[in-house]
Each structure stands twice: as C-alpha cells, then as structure tokens.
Amino acid sequence: MAKRVAQFHKVSFEQFKTDIRDTFGAIDDSEIKEVYESVRLPERATAGSAGYDFFTPVPVVLHPGKTVKIPTGIRVEMQENWVLKCYPRSGLGFKFRLQLNNTVGIIDSDYFYSDNEGHIFAKITNDTNEEKIVELEAGAGFMQGIFVEYGITMDDDVTGTRNGGFGSTSK
Image (cartoon, rainbow, N blue to C red; front, side):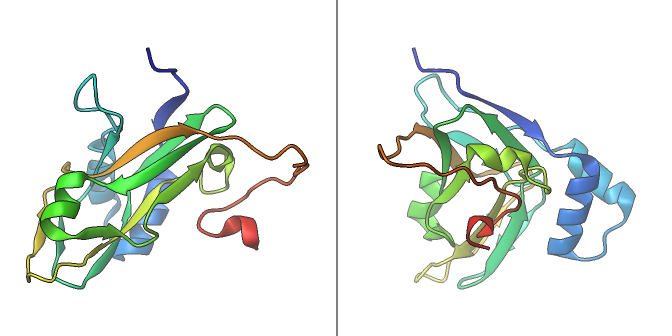
C-alpha cells in the first residue's frame, strides 16, 4: 500500500479572493464566494492512479499560443522529504499540447507555511500547432500532481526557510 504523506486543503477565502482578483481583475465578492465554494480538492480517478487531478475553479478558454494563470484555491500539507510534482493531465497534453509554463510544477513541503498560504497556481499555455482551442468548464481536471519522496546530500546543512511562491527561495 502507498504511503499516506499529505493532505489537501483549500486556501482561505481572503487569500483566494486576493489571488483570483490578481489574475482576472475586479470581480464581485459574491461571485468570488460562489467560485470559492465550488473549489474541489484534488483527487485520484482510480485506485491505481498515481496522480491527483486538480480542477479549474473557473471556465478556461485558451486559443492557440495563449496563456492563463490559474489560482487553484488549493494548498497541500505534506511530510518533510516529499514534494508534489505537477504536470498537465495526459489527455490535454496529448490532444492539445497543453503545457505548464515551468514544465513541471514543484510544490515543496515548506510552501504550505508561506504568507500566501501555499496557494498552488498553474500557468498553462495552449501550445498547439494544429490551431485547436482548449475549452475547460469550471470543475474540469486540467493538471495532475504526484507525490515523490526525495533525498539530500550527506553534507547538506541548509537551515533557511521559505516565505513566498514562485522563485521565492532565490530572493
């Protein structure tokens, strides 16, 4: 049986409101609340699935060559020495060349404690060369996350802590 190493949570409504407005502009609080309440925690589709499907909280239409940043409303609490690696869902990558802009999203175990509550974002691009439009309804699976254990070198003595999202460890 697989190890149980993590727990998904929603970010707070206040964090979600800040982040969705940063992405999509001025939106009414009641509309944001409705979207927030519909946020689904990631889940596996079958007992044999390695990946946890993430669901888009809003409808997404991506024309060829276009990009969108999706605030998922999700954070993950996991044991030390584990990482969540995020990829596009296989079918979307295969059918539309849907790409995560950072190729593989890496969610470290200490990200959960950041000022932004460890809110997981995905920046995706429709990289089709066949002029296909990606249309995802709210609640559609678009990304999958896989938990992976990792090791460190014998002489590693890092003691620093994180506070932030993308690129925060190099600031």
